Each structure stands twice: as structure tokens, then as C-alpha cells.
Image (cartoon, rainbow, N blue to C red; front, side):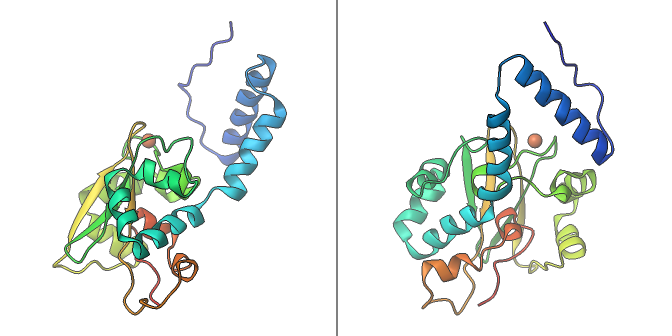
Length: 203
Ligand code: FE
């Protein structure tokens, strides 16, 4: 039996790549995965699954009050209606930003992230400084690292995702977008606005 002990943390990009290659080789050798399946999986998360899917869900929630209600009650089930779902999104919770409260997500332990609506996390999301600072001084992090000023009157809530529950953010709909179609609205929804480190783009 081959045993993989995950005690060593690779530091450079080359080390990470070498480690991924080694794990992939073991999986293929043991018949747990085929090379084609590995390639297909990597391609899927590189090219097809990404924030555009979360943007589609947000645009629907902005235009359909019934859908929004469903989304806030059970994000996983509501996303399924739009064909959005899968790995690392089995239990998702969408958090609605309003004038009173702004939400931002993190995984303080590692890098848990709602893959079906956002794809793979950016490097800064996985970095120690973000994970450590966003829970202690969210307003400052948003201001200094993301140039995003949350008004004093708006409470900031930080949500710590884990392997079981993945949070994501339903940003405020920008003003002056009343006449816009769902497709046009989706273009205003950025990755950062789904994480809570930025607003949706102003119309
Ligand atoms: Fe994590």
C-alpha cells in the first residue's frame, strides 16, 4: 500500500507542480483515476467553471424576487435550477449585501471556496496575510488591499468557510440598472464582488 504523508508544505511554484505531478502519477498508477479524467478535470476548472457562473446566478436574483428568496434560503438548490453546482459546492450559503450590512468571505484554515459559482480561488485568497487580517480588521483590508471603502454606517460581517459550508456573496445591485437585461447585469458582477472584496461594477 502506498501511503502519502502530507506533512511537507511545498513552497515554490515548481515544488507545488512537482507534488501535483507525483500525486497524479500515483492516482493513475493505482487505477483510481485515468490520465484523461485528470486532464478533463483540470481543463474544466481552468476554462469552464468560473465567476461568470456566479454572475449569472446573481443577475437572476437581482431580477427575480422569488428566485432570490430561494437562493437566500438554500443556495445549493437554487443554483441547481440554473444548472450551477458540483464539487465543493454541496452546501453553499449566499449572503445578501444591503445598505446595512456588507459580507466578505474567507477560509481562515486553508482555502475553502465555492467552486461551482467562482471556480478556483485566486492566490491572495489562499494567502496567510488575507486569511489572518480579514477577520481582525476587515474594513482596513478592504480599503488598503482592494481600494473598497465600506461606509461607516454599514456593518461588515466576515464569514469563515470550511470543508462543509461554503459561503459566497450576493452583492448589492448597482443603482441606475433598472432597465438592464439579465445578461447585461451579469457583466457587472465581478469575482471580487462575489467574495465581498469589491462592489458590483457601477452601471
Ligand atoms: Fe479551507
